[in-house]
Image (cartoon, rainbow over all chains, first blue to last red; front, side, top):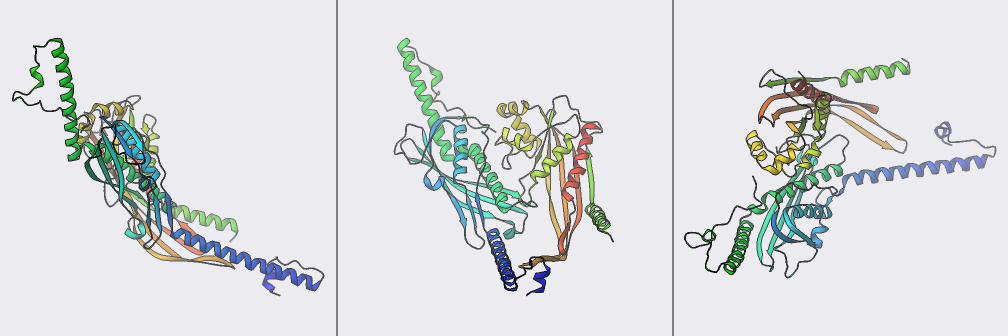
Length: 271
Length: 219
C-alpha cells in the first residue's frame, strides 16, 4: 500500500485486512477520479477562456436633438435584429449586436423623426414620408492580443438605405461607428468587448443624429420636401385668400423673378 | 522566525514596495485667485477619448470625481450621467476640443438649456492613460493531480501621464492646467504561491491630480 497515501490521513485502518485494502483501493480510485475530473475541468476552463462570446447588452439615452418634421417607417429585418459577428480565424470570438442595435435605432429614430413606426418587413408602399432600412455591412474587432495595445476596439459599418414613400431609393448611406475601451485588471474580455460595442453603438447613434440631414441625397430630398410643403401651404393660403378676396395677390410668396422663393434653412440642422 | 513575524515582514515589504511610485505634478494657473464657485454650482470631470493610441480610463475619471468631491464646496456630476443627459454632444466624435467650439455649442438653446439646468459651472477635461512601459522576468505555474504551484520572478513598470484642463462655462475661459506623471514598478514573486506586489500608479496619479485640482477651488 502506498505509504504516502496512508500518511495523508485518507486511509482509515480496519481490523479485517482485505476489507481495509478494498477501502484503500476504493479511496485511491476515488482520488484518481477526483484528480482526473479536476484536470478535465481545468482543461475545459482553459479552452473556454480562449473563446469569447458576447451578447451585447446596454441601454441608450434619449438624444438631445431637433426633430425633423417627417414621418418614417424603420425596417428591422431578421438579419439586422439577430446580427452576430463571428470570428473563427484564430481565436474564436463572437458578438451578438442584433437586439441592442434595434434598441439603439428605435431610440434615435424616435428622437430624430416626428413620427417613427417599426416593422420587420419592407413595405411596398408607405403612408410615411420615408422608409429607413438599416443593414450591417461589416463588423471588425481588435483585441489586445492582436494589436499589443491596451484597448479593445469595435468597428461597425452600416448601410442605411433610405427610400421615399413609393419605395424609390433616396440614399444608400454608408455610416461607420467606432468604439474602444481600455483593458482593466481583472476585467474579462467579454465585459471589455461589450463595453467597446456599446461605445461603438453610441457612436453610431451620434453619427446618425448629427449627420442624417447632411448626407447630400437626403439633404436634397429634405429640401425638396420642404419646398413642396411650402408650395402646398402657399397654394392652400392663396386659394383661401382668393376665396376671401378674389382680386388680391400675395407677392411675398413669389420671388421677383417669378420663381418660387428659396426654402428656409433645414429644421434639423444645428451646429 | 515565527509565523506572525513572517506575516508582519511580508506585510511591511508589501507596504514599502507598493508605495514605490513616484508622482510629479505640474500646474499652470491663469491667476493666483481661487476659482469662484457659488452655492449650487457644479463641476463635471470628463475624459478625452478621441485619441487613436490611448483611452482615458473611465474609472480614473470616477476617481478624480471622488477626490474633488472631498472638497465640501464642490458638487461633482457623475461623468456617465452627464454624458447621457447631453447625448450625443459629448461623445468622442462630437465633444468640443476647444472653448470656441464649446461656445458655439452653448449658442444652441437646446444644449445650453440642458447644461444650465444642471447648474454646471466648470468642465474639467482629463486626457491621458496609464501604460505598461517595461516588463522583465517570468512566472510559470503548473498543476497536476498531486497539486500545483508557481515559480519565478517578474517585474513590470507602469507610467501614468495625465493632463487636466479647467474650463469655466460662465466666463468661457480656461483657468488652469494640471499635469501629472506617475511611475511605479510592480513585482510578482512566486515560490509555490505567487505574491504580487503591485504599484498603485493610477491611484497615485489620481490622488496627485485630484489634490492639485482641489486647490484651484479651495485655495
